[in-house]
Image 1: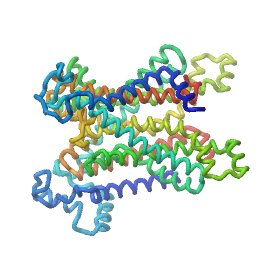
Image 2 (image 1 turned 45 degrees about the vertical axis):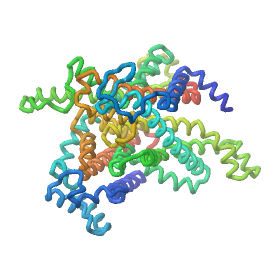
Image 3 (image 1 turned 60 degrees about the vertical axis):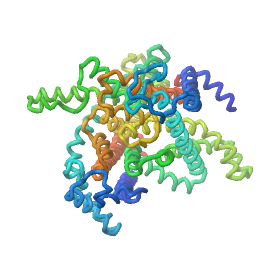
Image 4 (image 1 turned 90 degrees about the vertical axis):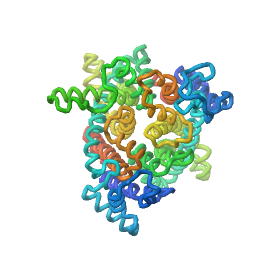
Length: 278
Length: 322
């Protein structure tokens, strides 16, 4: 199936269409938002201003413009999730495909994967973040470290079924070299699985980053959705006044909507692969 | 046997990681402990001596490692800086609250998710099916702590039905047994609800899909053809088989529920392990942090191992092959 064909099919699913549209809106806001919005996320104004034309989401207790912070947060959270999920997917797919095709390598890689997968991810990330005050790069590295094994396991499983197919056997019989079979024939068949895992990884990273910040383990100098939420939650009168409506609600809803958009897109992909479920 | 060996290997790796991380991380978080001026917390001389003795930083790494493992075998997790008490003692008090949250939420989300999934599969393609799908996915997209905050605002602040946080009321500590049980339940309600709602989607969706597949199998058609009532067909023939993969999923999700519980505890100031980790990291209470990490890791891993055994018991087909 061509890429265009696949895209058309996905777009026929209503939930996938909603998901894709939302993702595009988020991507646009993250890319252009901090640049279009006149206030900078590190610029100070009067503290605790309620929403107004000048500050649509008001300002926080340090006087930062909350809309600027939300847009900057979108940039940070999306960049982190995309980079870390992409690197995990690339490493995982590479190892998974190689492990599926070359049996001996596969045995070794899969034992490592088994061990990695039986270590709970979130507590491990919490411990690493607690001892190395996290920045963008170290956080990405942590998420890649715990993210690649599940990609490797799923892509390998896909390769193991695919290599039984007659056209692969035929390619072997006619003397096509192994690397060429892997690259030309096997790699394309794992792309849907890898893409589905990429989406799931992004979901996990967005929530886990926000969770780390919420537990007080984020980088206090960055502007991420989780950091804004975490900062808001330390404000004593947050919930008993209506401050939370413009301070905690927007970043929380942004995380929720972004995860929902990813979930809908994943759902569309799954229905595409297995139409009986719709 | 293979599984048990792998489990032991992983336990050893986790223990070693827990030993190495604070010693090898850049920035040397422990290096400042013996420097009274650089320490982030004003430590008493006694506390500093205790911590230094526990980490034994002046001794060779191999000796430190041996003492660490021997200490763990005796249940010695070190001395909490903040509480000025043994870490194990602090954690035992915290663990029961986390266990209550995780246990209660797991039971409820499995029941509710399975039930809704079965309804959805039975009425496949209907408005109800589509509504349930979107609704469970929508609640599942919320970060657990953010949903917790929303629940506090709605049920705690606006409606004033339930307490805003904590695990029990100080005023009722002297009350009768039934008063205290009701009080604890009222404090648990919102955190558990937040966990159930955020974990529902996967179980719901898997039950639905699994049941849809099973309902298309030949033996279901045969059962229907011989005139079996629809209800018996669903509950006696289809559901038990459809629920098998759900057991595996529930085991895989233990880690995710615990992650949710850790975050929800912070949102509700619920005195479990998650709150302990958050407080410990804010106060740089490294022994408490590491103890909480070990207890969490080992509990999740033990739960996963148990679930795997349970799965083999439930599915006779696996017993024959292994």
